[in-house]
Length: 388
Image (cartoon, rainbow, N blue to C red; front, side):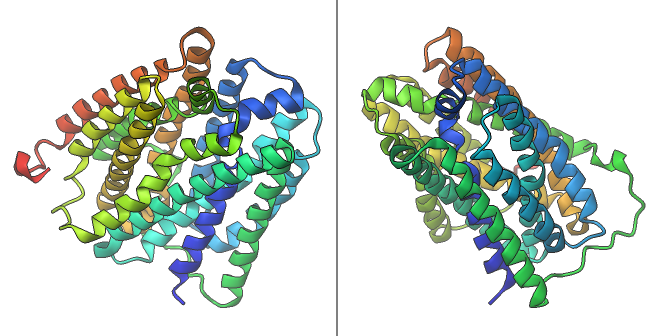
């Protein structure tokens, strides 16, 4: 069986365990620590993003000398132990310390993504990126639903035991692949490198800024979506809330099938603008506080976001050297998480002082900015308007 299959399975498990708590942090803080201030949730999301921003580039540098799977054996084992302990911590300050340490070690699983692309022929990159994007979306679906089930049937803190199980699975699978001789050696780069190589420039810098705004707009609507949905629908079912939250991820599966049945675009530069325009429509629909418009908006937005995310990632690896995939990915991932960090903080402030549909309006403005910046960057590379 190709090593890619094992790595894709590892990615699915990692995303499921990572997303189990995402829609329910406000509820977790309220029931576990008595913290009800929505700004606290935003600050915590920001801290998580900042931790990933710092940790992942370090793992990318380490992967130049140590094979990825060998790194994952140890980091995921440590992450699992720490995640399991979070289920029993009752001190709020200690929870912050330990849970952020979990993110430091858990974040190493992001090395799997560029590793899969490095061992995949360039001609198959868009297809593999599409599959991985669906896996990530599917994982968020399952994570949100499983998280809702745990909260409805048990207690929010037990989600961390599920997260620990996912980390242990990744460590065990990495160890298995190493024992089977499946790990390729770390790429040997011919040029000298320093920490300054983590600073993007040229087209990579432009793409990084664009995706910063793109992920800012996307994550701005996430932290308090469950509360917004429940206020509109008057439903208190956590399973239903998690399901509605995960609609965009489910739609991505249909988008993957549609991409396989139609003629591919000429280059990764094409196909992004129309998807961005569809995302704008989806955001406007979700901003209107009615059950049907929210559901329709999430379906449309899920389709558009999938197409955008796949093409942006394909574009990243298109302009990168295979030997530097992990480092190049860490650059753009840093900017993406900077957008997520800003969104997390902004979402808490907006939820505190403004109606819960306002984040969708702000996200609309963010996507409009993405459309403008991407057009300015790509217009010289696009042959005709009809091609995108």
